[in-house]
Image 1 (cartoon, rainbow, N blue to C red):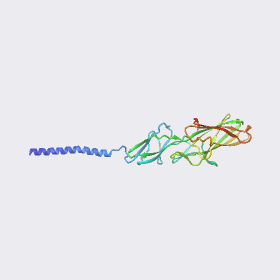
Image 2: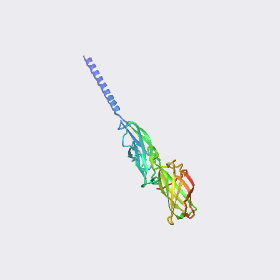
Image 3: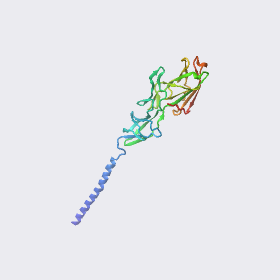
Image 4: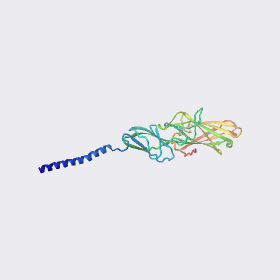
Length: 292
């Protein structure tokens, strides 16, 4: 009888031991099933790091048309995203641009238009953008390092006045036609109709110089119309020159400046007829510094 009781106790102890062992394993299995990489197991997050860019660049992160100001590096987009493919655009709020969705438009000059198209300001800020398709995974954070590229290019125009008397020149304005005014930041290309811009020339001795900052050339022709006013008698001259050949390589490396030089041949005494521009030369990547 005693042996039988002892065996029953042993079996009871074994059963309790099995239960003690099984309970932790069961709990561990439950905990494992509930572990996730992020607090959002059914969605994904996106974090961007903009290295080497100015802290005051006022950059914006646009995902699927929803925007957020980038406040630091790295920066996590405030909205979680469903798994799959999404469209991402990063850009800076450059001065002189209006942003309409993913379109960046150079400000118009006094909100007016000219007969040869919309007239835009000649020196907007340095627009920089990046565009890409991203793939978001559930329960994970996508880390990105987009590199926004400069989308405008500095143009420096310089004339040397010959034959006439440059000291009689009061003002010179130039209307540059056949340039871009709108940039599609998602497609990373200029769009729309050709625009124009008006630049003011500065005279230093026999040199006339002007600066512009452009999204690029556009359309069938690029021309420069010079309007010269003189100090005596209110006389004026108008000269138009074809710039297609001179600006043929302008839509290249936007980071490097582009310099165009020529000779402005005016009648002796600048009393009659139109001036003539000859000897066009271009320098691509000349380190032009166009001040705003």
